Every structure is written in structure tokens, then in C-alpha cells.
Amino acid sequence: MKILHVFDHSIPLHSGYTFRSAAILREQRALGWETFHLTSPKQGATAALDEDVDGLRFFRTPPISATTPVLRETALMRALRTRIVEVATKLRPDVIHAHSPVLNALPALSAGRRLGIPVVYEIRAFWEDAAVDHGTARERGPRYRMTHALETWALKRVDHVFTICEGLRADIVGRGIAAERVTVIPNAVDIESFQLSGEPDAALKSRLGLDGRTVIGFVGSFYAYEGLDLLLDAVPVLLQRLPDLRVLLVGGGPQEASLKAQADRLGIAGRVIFAGRVPHDEVSRYYDLIDLLAYPRHSMRLTELVTPLKPLEAMAQGRVFVASDVGGHKELVRDGVTGRLFRAGNPQALTEAVVDMLAKRGQWGDYRVAGRRFVESERNWRTSVGAYRVPYARLAGAV
Image (cartoon, rainbow, N blue to C red; front, side):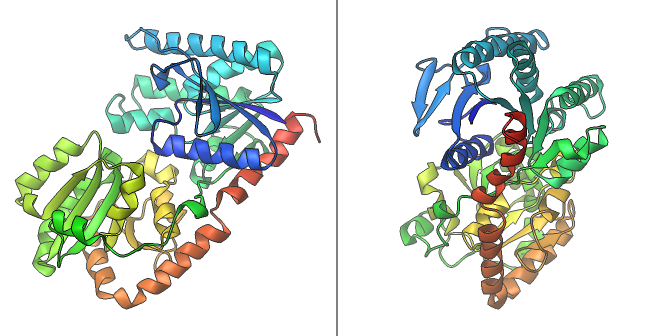
């Protein structure tokens, strides 16, 4: 079976999106399928229109020059459709598999209909909800409603829909899509890629001023929905109860300057360490410095519907964490078993969860074992990717 995947962007760029894509491709190839890979103009300029990255060949679409809203998106979709037709005509895949956002689905649909190839659409998050968090759209505003309508239009016309979690599946079915046409391919982890947490690097710990400190931390991108502002709001009260506390934030992103200003305003700048972005192969050294991870996501449509990767990665490494009780977390975390949930948006609830977890270190071994068992048995990529088999086979005429 030959599958042509259409991505927004891919490796060598690093993001949760590209890591999921690469994991899917590796596991599909392990099943014996031929996979081909095409990226949208949002990949940016590349050395060649065809290039190999980590053993995977990618067909690139040249960047576009348009910058005006609507004209930009129209140009992007036109360029992507042309490239899909060109590549698919040569490869003749059994299925064209478009991944979020809808700007990929619409060109794939048009190309698939022209060439007589079935098209599936995989939704990882709704573009309109991400735009609200990024500040480029207002919830229920004109742009939001237009994008919502485009998503629904595409969902009703593709041959099958995949999504990453039950929250998104319920929303899709609620738009009038038959339940049997929607399959969940859950976020998962590559167990072999994650080692159990190790001893802290003494030199790194000393360099960051963490000797003798209790460390709460976060490793990832600093987006508004991650709720790191809530974590900082809780720090002054936490320090009253845990004077040796330090907060380690590893990564960067749109909220970095805002978070640094917040730390200054709260008078806790000396207690919050911004380590910056670190190379991917160095991340585990920073994780090893953290006693307790925090995932304080704010409640909004994006976080209520979408499951993140970070808690799964933490479980795979045998790490303990507290997380807000948004829908995406509740779908992954068994409160008091694989992690600790607290009421979203409430710094006092976050404070109590942190203090309680730190007071019960004797139970952390149970959390570690339960979390690792969960990802090994249920949230590994082999199990998740296996769910593509039946819809693919039906569309390819194999069943």
C-alpha cells in the first residue's frame, strides 16, 4: 500500500507536530507500507525540492511571496495543490493523507478528486482554536467562523477522518460526520526513545544555581495556553511554604518575554531560571534536574479538546508531575495514579497540588511504575498506528 502524506511542516524542524509525523511514518513503514511525504510552503526555503531527512524523503513546496491575509492562504493552497498533483501523478498512491490544518486538506481534496485517489484528513487541532490562542483570531469572530465552516466542509467531503483523541472525535461527530467515518489515532510515545530518569548532572545543576533546591519545572514551548503564567502566580505563596523552591523553565516561545516580565513584577526573578532552548539530545539532562514537572494548561477549547504529548513523555521517563484538569489532560492522566490533577486556572489549587506531591515523595515510585506501564501497554506508536489498517484497506480496495 502506498500513502502520500501531506504535512504543514516536517523534520528537520522540531515541534510536537513534526515528532508525531515522524513517529507515524516510521511505524507505518514497519508495517510494510510505502510512505511518501510532501510539505506545504510553510516549511520555508529548503536546499532542494526533494530532500532526505533521517531516512525519509520529503517533497517540498516552494515558499510563497504573498503576505496579505486571505491572499496569502489562497496562494498557499494553490501552490500546494499544484505540487500534490505533480507528485501524486508520478507516484500514484493508494491514498492521499492530509494532516492539519485545513489549508492542507482543501488542496488535497481537489487534487484527489482530479486524480481519482481517495483522500483522508487527520485533525490534530482545529486551526481556528489555535489562532485564538496565538491572538490572530477572536473566538466566534468572523475569521473564526469562516475557518470553522471550512473545516466542517472538508470533513464532510473527505473519504475518512482521523484525529488524535476522543475530545476532538466528539467535536467532529457533533458537526454531522458519521461516527464510523472517524478513527482516533492517539498520541503516543516511542518507548525505546525514552530512558527512565537518571541522576542529575552535578556540574549543570551547580551552574544553574540548583544545588540543595527543590525544583519544579517545565520543558517545552512557551505558548499562552500552557499556563506558565499561572505557575509563576503561584510561586510567591509556594515560597512561603517551600523556601528552597526554584522553578526551571526550559525552552522558549511567544510568551518568554511576558513571563520574564511577570517574574520581575512578582519579585521572584531570582527564583525562576530561564534556561533557554537546548539541543534535543541535551533535553534529558535538564529533565533530570527537575523534581516535579508542572503542566498548568489553561482551560480553552484547544486544551479541553486536544491531548498533549508532554505528560506521555513524562510517564515514559518515569517522571512525576502535576497537571491542570483540562479535558486533554483528563483523557491521559489517572488522577492520583499516573499523575496529579488540579483545578485549571486556580493558583491556589496548583499550590496545594505541588505541596502535597512534594510531601508524599514516598509514593512517587508508584506513580512512576503506573505511568510507564500505561504508555508501554496503551500509548505506544505500534498500537496507535495499527488503527490506520482498516480505513486504509477499505479505501485502497483491499477489503
